[in-house]
Amino acid sequence: MKDRHFPNLHATATFAHTVRIDYGFMPVRLSDTTAAAAIAQQLCPRCRAGRIFQSSLLTWFPKMHERCPACGFKFEREQGYFLGAMYISYGLALAMIVTLTCTLWLSMGWSMQKAVIAAVAIFLPLAPPVTYFARVLWLYLDWAIDPEPE
Ligand SMILES: [Zn+2]
Image (tube, rainbow, N blue to C red):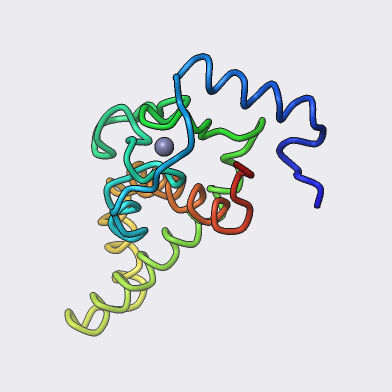
């Protein structure tokens, strides 16, 4: 099976070598944290112990760790890797705005137009954390589909 992240054996060997040298890291032990809890706490998809972000998602533009502080897993597996997270981000945003609109429309008796405008206004401050949280979901989705051979 060809690995899209490591198209040749040399790269795999180099990567493994780098991880072991730089992080003194040996086989990954998965923590007892469940996937859902690890996603909620934004933990590394490989070990579920190290944090993905350097600060809270509620801070302005939280910085990601380049590698998991616990196991050395490189979060941005390839150039442009997080473009995929944008689709998740759009989906989350749409779902939240539709839910808010319906809630306001049904509970307040407002016109649909007014409900949509209010829902977007309520959603806007949530857009940055939703965008970054989408990266966490993307990391887990990609990990589920294509875990790194170890
Ligand atoms: Zn990790």
